[in-house]
Length: 323
Image 1 (tube, helix red, strand yellow):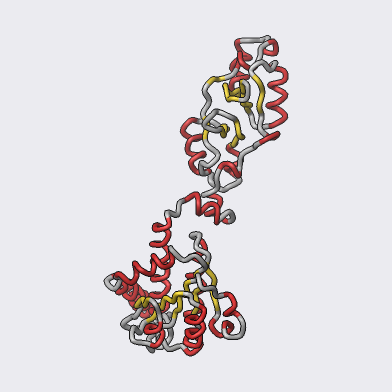
Image 2: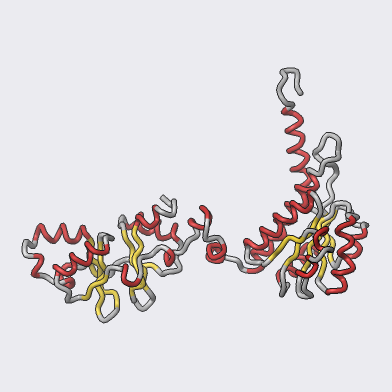
């Protein structure tokens, strides 16, 4: 505690600096082994099993979760529980990533014989390149640090931060190697704010019977009824199934000023031809940008052949917290 009676901020700054230095120190140690580890994970036909004891176990859980979030099936296996039945989750096509800073964690070492017998490949993440775990692994990734951030140099701090960062580096390099895209992320993260931002319009659009659609020859009385019933402030106009135009509330108001007998007209007489369309795979933020640029409140989702698949309204995007 400082002389003011408040916690020592200089100590907190040293902790952050030590942990930052631990991560920076990994950069020059990345070599061919890291590249081989990424390829091993990429080519893994089974699952990635991440294991570690204590604080390393907590980091292992996060690494496994990150792999899963980029489409690489991964699980955490508790090394103590593993020897009491959980080893049944291992398959010859799997890759095991084992975290142990000392490389001598008893619970982790007890898994080596079974891993070798069952056949999964083994990647060791350790701060001790000469340790038992490192020597037994197919690949060893060095995450050693000069010191822990703990003033007593005891509590795992800088070492766990380094292991976590190395796991993220593996996952993000694997992401690029796999060709993982925003669309893939959207498929795997349908919930939460990230999922909403990466949601495709096909998940938001009014489709089927909910989409307002009329034919070219539909009388305006029926056009207005369709627009009122679907409550999107517009309707698509189709000709033999293909999109021919759009009629919006604005179109109706403007036409009523010039044409008192508007009910005597048909959809083809009032519609705006060549409306803006998007594909069903477009992400919600992209749809919002187009609508803002065009100053429109609805946009039609159509195929390359101009077949109407649905309609997205600005209100649908409000519900995704994009606005």
